[in-house]
Image (tube, rainbow, N blue to C red; front, side):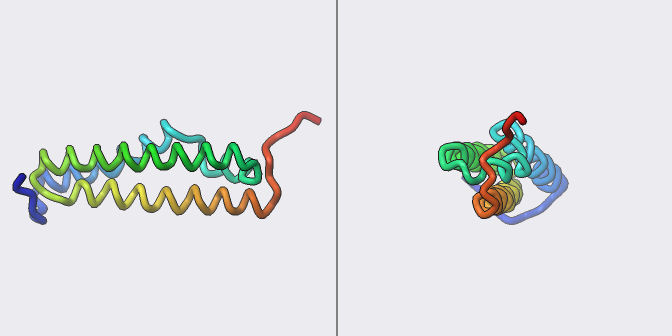
Length: 109
């Protein structure tokens, strides 16, 4: 495996595609952070959300590694890991805000 830090046109293209696709992986695995904030006080739902965030991180790592192998550059993996770290922080913040607010979800009135 001959991966380096070069950033040619193919590497830039795969970096951009892999990073953008990482958001789609999060979207497929989870509801929005706004929704997570609205049930953050429910321990079972919050744990489920965190589990799917972890699954998205693992899937994005595979996506980034595959794109890096194609580009022969580490940059696509850097892109997917960057998006994953950002989204981990976003979901964690949303769940903590929901917990602090006592948000268990929506109820019919």
